Length: 434
Image 1 (cartoon, rainbow, N blue to C red):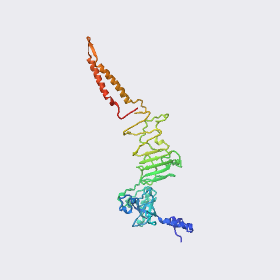
Image 2 (cartoon, rainbow, N blue to C red):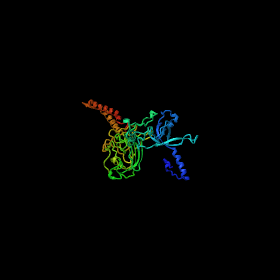
Image 3 (spheres, rainbow, N blue to C red):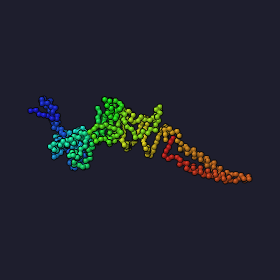
């Protein structure tokens, strides 16, 4: 009587030989160690009830599962298979399970524990891949079936019209009940050769390239392949898709640097359609015959390797050392409002400094030199006035003080002395030049 084999055993023929017999035994043993489980609960923080019973802090990431399509009063625990790469499932998602040695291997070599790998991609969607246990009722109603099948299209379920809401959070630990199903989370559209890592909330890393349409008459496939050749490498790190995305979450989209919440683009030979908030280049010249200070190529037209950071706010902070900005041509600061510099010491070392305009012609006065020259001039004038204010006139051959002139000379002398006393105040205590 023929036996229908399933899984790995389906690949084994019935003709016995030492080689195939041994392979059959190995595969049979392997299949007995592989299971598919439905997540019933998960430990994500130390507020989980009786967490010490499962290992305390080391139990974080542990799931409790039941066998696929089987109802069980008792759920079994399983720990993450990978220690460096963590992907935590939601309640009611399916995971692949292995029975492997545990930390008691030194005491009992035959003791095994369950380990889970990533979720089974039931709906082929990054947001979630959950499905209720069909064994919870004799048969799912057509309405319920349609409800959960719509997950494949990204449709959020609700309790209206008899359609149940699927529980995706821990039923045991309210502090970790943070997942809210959103119908407007879209998966990324892939292109040939792409490697894409997607989170559940519209955050992603694309290791891709220029991908021009193989049928040119059909238009561009994305926002970065207007120029270049297919295969030019591109890395896009995106956090948050556009806020105005539709509720048709099953539709695939591509990144859009203008509308995505935050983005980092590492390009090779792509033109990225980003239009900066400020493109004020008045301090640059338009004379291309000059080797420097020429208006830079606009961001949307530049097609050589570059790194672009784009968000509502960008903070660059060096905790212990320095921020170093270096460029072969120009470092440009452009804003629609103000540029503010707050520091203890500001040093500018440049052969040509122009303030107010790139066409500025008036030279800045050297304060210390001017102070010295004015001080010397005032000193000589005061000495001269000291002599002049004692001048005499002769009336009928008799010398007498020329009072009107002496009073005028004395007043000028007093004014010059006051100016000299305050002369040092013309020097800035903060700004120095050479």
